[in-house]
Length: 315
Image 1: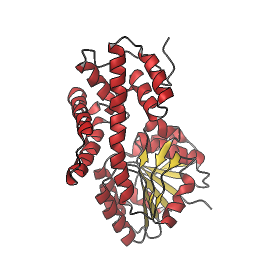
Image 2: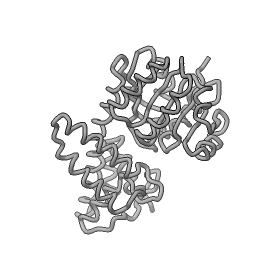
Image 3: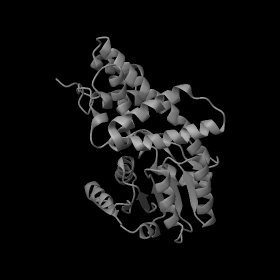
């Protein structure tokens, strides 16, 4: 018999992951959706359809679950939710935490959950919302092997295409890896942005450059390129809100500073992120580093779309 799931957090990533869990998880009970704004969870459950329902009360959502899987926007949101969760009986339940949280906060949270008689797996994910919707994330589960084994059947081939299995590692190790991996993510985004700025300034069509990126560096680089050239970075609903990018990058800088690690390239990208925030305000998207790079090179912030959202060329 499959476990009963509750999924906490209906942001872009949470909606994608929860939808794939319902559709591919081979569950025999509906997945309960919860969000701090109930209407968001209710609307998403209605869109997903059979196999999903929404509950407004967090304690009630936890009570009915065997496995509670969370993917929340910020560390503060995670800690706030768990304060409520820990006020109820959670003995025997498994908590899987996929938000971006510092290693120290992850370890403290896991200790409190275990003291309450429950299991805890830290499982941050690599990827962005369109990759999440396609089930192409990479997950990093850490914790006791027995606990990690319980969640794996609902990961690879369901919400993810790959797993970096850190069974028996301290749970904070997964969060540690996620933060350091953020360095590569931001450098890749900045590299793609600069490539496209240089291509356009020197007369090379961005569509041609995109095809080359997709061929030479398939995967995330191609996704970021497509999103830049389809105007995703200046839409009203950001894929990665700039405030979130600022917070995560601040965690990375704090980690580096605490250990005396110099990150000159990352610091340069952080300045670009700050410039996006200054230009766009809280509605800015992380991929706005492309727009900022365009401004710095004498072009408009907004690039006229040359690709459709699916990556095909606009005729």
